Length: 257
Ligand code: NDP
Ligand code: 8X3
Image 1 (cartoon, rainbow, N blue to C red):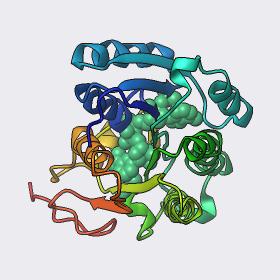
Image 2 (spheres, rainbow, N blue to C red):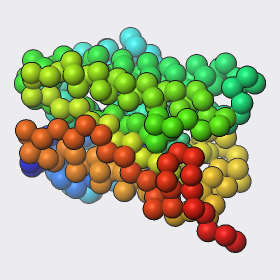
Image 3 (cartoon, rainbow, N blue to C red):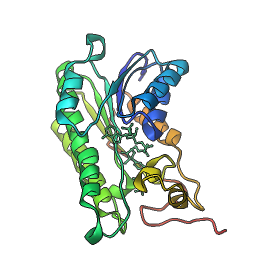
């Protein structure tokens, strides 16, 4: 299916998988609606996306945790941007890596508010239009962490288990319409994810990827564009992808050094 001139809304487009996804859809000639909180970084992604072939770019300074801001942003889109064909629910983060019984409640709230409630708010604002127009595709970012919980990551893993349930539930709830729903579930991807998790501790973040050739953000973007470009009658429910050196969220074959 050609993606040329499709309107693609990507949350968390200012870095990592979201930014790479913007570039991949740009190369297909899509129109990009990019959202994140860091307006400067988002503007940079927009400029690069235009250079890569995006038909047009519109950026929104948006915190997905704010329900009112999400609804208003969608309601007040300029008419030429209002008909979203593909929604990539990518905005998300982890905070901390510690035992549940000593975890920080503020960290839990940030993860749940972003990864679960934010995803729900954006979905609730965008999908009704897709149903009315009789076309659309929602692509949610899950994780191998949603499949198998790892030690010290209970709350992050819980948010991704919730994403899986929401993804499956939405797919059932749009059954009978042409709207498609997909979860793309990567394992280890080298982005700012660990830097954010460890609040800027680059040394600790680097250790996460030690002895493994991780996925790149571009690998994941490639899968996202692949699911979006299947023929209109094909719905890919779920894509789980890992580095070859990763078996699941717990098991790695790291190089010795
Ligand atoms: P990055 O930290 O590189 O990117 C996260 C993006 O989410 C940023 O653009 C950030 O933008 C945005 N974001 C965070 N909070 C908010 C918010 N409240 N409102 C709007 N945007 C927000 O990490 P990744 O690219 O790795 O993560 C993207 C997604 O992929 C997440 O959902 C993550 O859980 C998932 N994932 C990541 C994996 C990995 O190993 N890296 C593996 C599996 C899944 P800004 O700060 O500007 O708002
Ligand atoms: C991100 C992958 O395993 O670091 O979802 O939690 S992991």
